[in-house]
Length: 198
Image 1 (cartoon, rainbow, N blue to C red):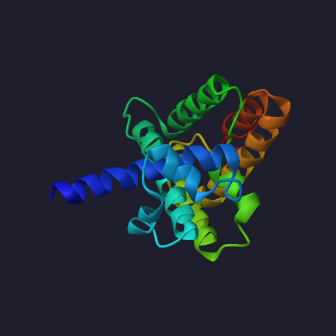
Image 2: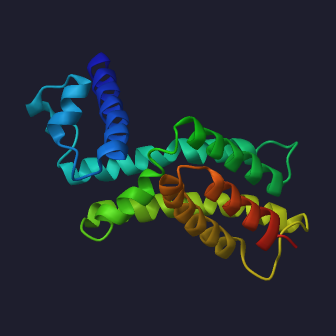
């Protein structure tokens, strides 16, 4: 039992370090040795946890999105907020965090979509799955705002959520070159306070 728990903890540490290194160095710029060394795992032990670097990359993607889903869900479960307010509160937190990180990193999903989205089937599928989970969670908030008469209803919540994901990813890329959260702020204002409004 203790051995299983230790293995799970080590796997979790490998995934956490994978998120950090892939965010900083990219998929191709990160070697397995970098990850293992940072966690203190012997080189030959990697394959006790993951079958390949590609499988590791796919698991890192799934691991990365989970806190964002939980964070968004926390806002959506806040009964003091309507759907529009919950989405605004969530994105406000993301914008503040981006400023604290001095505009570095952006979104691992967006970074990897550009780097390996069309070269690794396993990672492409993990990216697609993560984006759809995220889109579906955003759509819950949008649907609530539609039910409250706050957001337009001529488009489905899923269509608006897709648009929001795509615009947000573009704003994150622009944030890096502008070295400013302004693209993120404008994205949210133009959509959540503009285009989406009833």
